[in-house]
Amino acid sequence: GAVVSQHPSRVICKSGTSVKIECRSLDFQATTMFWYRQFPKQSLMLMATSNEGSKATYEQGVEKDKFLINHASLTLSTLTVTSAHPEDSSFYICSARTEFSTDTQYFGPGTRLTVL
Amino acid sequence: DAKTTQPPSMDCAEGRAANLPCNHSTISGNEYVYWYRQIHSQGPQYIIHGLKNNETNEMASLIITEDRKSSTLILPHATLRDTAVYYCIVSRLNDYKLSFGAGTTVTVRA
Image (cartoon, rainbow over all chains, first blue to last red; front, side, top):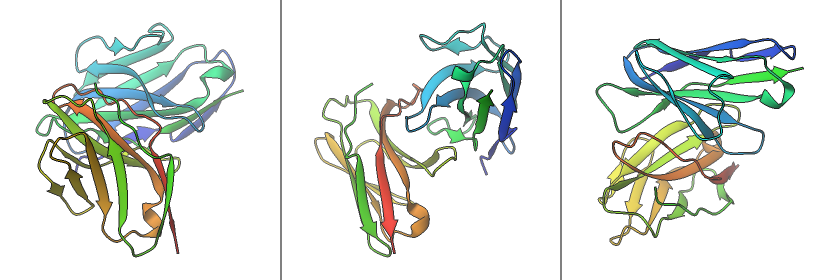
């Protein structure tokens, strides 16, 4: 149980375009989802926290107008990278907390974004 | 949240126990010790967590010192598939935010 999926697994786009990444909890309802970013050879950095039905909370230094997060249901959160640039190329990972086990997070497999 | 210190890397032999240390000398009374691992190009995987008692599950054992200033994750019989970066994280139970440090890169060798 507690499986989190992400789609797409990898995406290549041109500079200036927008890219949407989906994060789904497959067998549980996720009250809270998290979005992380990981640059090569670096650790994960939390970008934002989203609760179903409310606005996301962004970490300091993360542009909320550039990284749009929508958490419209208890099983789906989306991250849209707007007007992507090469420096946005990274590994984006989501995680989710279950409603019955709030002490752990379950991570998705990640999405590799490459902006040309 | 309290900071953690882990060795940057360690090797271990396949089939042997792997003991991964973590220092968290500034841990406070309501903070838990969590361990996650990340296999190359995948999302992190939850391993185990504990407050002050030793914990064991199907993946690993967690040994926390009595003063809670350090802990050890034990992989009882390391396999090649255990090669990964292991993160020791200290966080309050309902804080939800996980701060990932550099972790320990564990390489299991045949």
